[in-house]
Length: 214
Image (cartoon, rainbow, N blue to C red; front, side):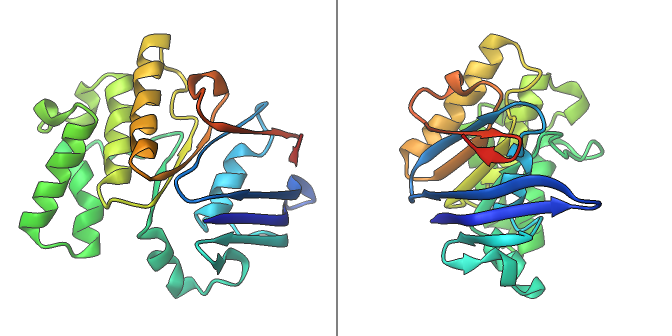
């Protein structure tokens, strides 16, 4: 599913975010990536999602080499990939249902099928009753669950999350963590960058330290 082979990422003017990182992730696996702030967790996820490209070594996702992937092939890679960003990137001028519908609309799903999928995704994260609510009306935990619903509405085989439980109280963080565990239980490959790997006791742990795997 995913392979890092001596992968590195350097940003100008010479800052190494990742250095000589090698690991494999099998299909259906749950992996929690830990490490201090600035360790390279977010960069690692960005490489998998082809938001960034490696400056050394190789990153392969579903057999495709991210470093040599043509720009017009990236949308096809991302069709099988859901990403929950640290800042959520919700659209605050659209309600919860419209936020979740957006990826399906962009992908050209028939309206009836898109509506059914959006409602199913909201139901999965416990937000179906709040589908008409604007994001500003939702709590921090509900906003995070909305971001998860939007990430999984296309039914991806790979789900990435960057600090999905940050800034949440312990009970809400545990609720959000259980959502990811549920997706992994039905065969989705899940990688989570997190400051608290204890929230994911079943996960295989990778720990970064200043861009290198410990």
